[in-house]
Image (cartoon, rainbow, N blue to C red; front, side, top):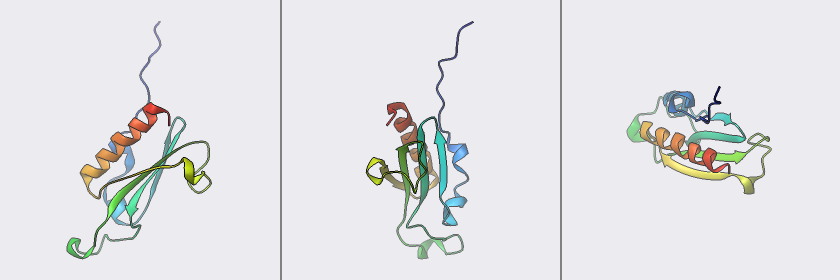
Length: 105
């Protein structure tokens, strides 16, 4: 019997619906040794603010090697990348996190 060589991947669907980020909530996750956080930057609730009044924002993804959580991890070990604050940006963030996972940080 042959063992599966397929590695775990982070899918867009597991990163919560986009509206979660409009509420100013961060998403924390892990896959293997990779730990990550995704949030609107600046982190604020804009869900009830009309889109033309929200101001500039990005979707910030932060990745680091575990086992420490976000607040306990060494800042110098965190990789940070900003994406457009959109559904497409969330898909791009998932792809970047998978690149980090493949590179094993």
